[in-house]
Image 1 (cartoon, one colour):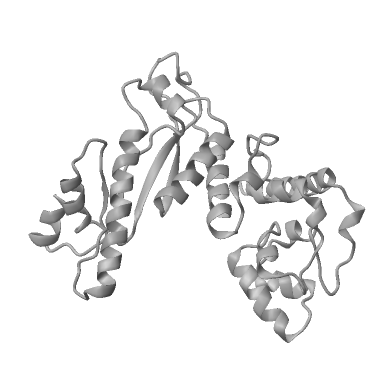
Image 2: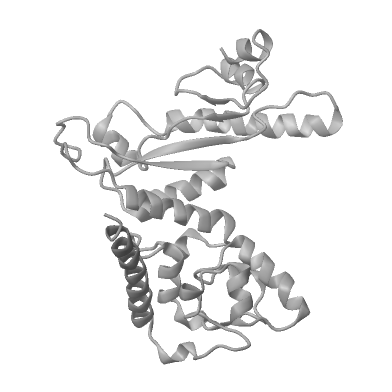
Amino acid sequence: MVKKLRLEQNYNGYIHLKTIPGASDELIKEAGLYADRMSINLEMPTEAGLKLLAPEKNHADVIKPLEFVQKQITQFSAHKKLIKHIPKFVPAGQSTQMVIGATPESDKDIMYTANAFYQNFSLKRVYYSGYVPISNDSRMPVLGTQPPLLRENRLYQTDWLMRFYGFKVQEILNDANPNLDVDIDPKLSWAIRNMQHFPVDINQADYKMILRIPGIGVMSAQKIVQARKFGKLRIDQLKKIGIAYNKAKHFIVCADSPYQLRDYQGTQIKAFILAESKSKYLKTANNQMLLF
């Protein structure tokens, strides 16, 4: 089908092709010449979870095609350096997906699996899909159980910290902290557990450390590094750069910081941030109610 789209229908747009366990290497190799990205679903985060629901399946059947595609990508890239007109093979890389909440894995189990697949197969993306109950199977959440959307969001946030912010998965999730905090995002949770790294002098810290400050994203961190070349940064400048100052202020010092972080404990800071966010949303809700 993908070959037909390219050659007969002259479709030049993006194609994400899903493969299935058991597909032949020959078919996968041919498909990879026409697809931009390929993926095969891991389904459950752990082998134990998969065996619980589908005893006839195993992760090895997923790993085999992932390994094959990775090797083909490497080989085609090497040939491309020597021969200009070698075709591209899956130029957008490969990905996988896990169902979350159908089986009793911890967030640590899920993200350690994701981390291993990122490292072992050079995946471009791991997708986390909250389970929606559709059957009365006693091994799974009962019908009517809400999909774990907040948990799904926290997992994606953790994924981004690993891929773009320089965090190791063991820093975020470990035996002492096997599950993500529902109330706050994982970067803030890490910061509160590691107060020895704060406060950070925003005018002196390196880029990697600035990325670890709650309320500061990749683009804001880059802007901070550039802007401070022209003088010490102040609060109003940080706000203009676009950081979430109400969150970041508890972890930084700058040219005109009003207080020192050492005056507060991590638990107090968490309470302050949660109170501020609840007040913000409460104010929005009250304003909306006045309209009706």
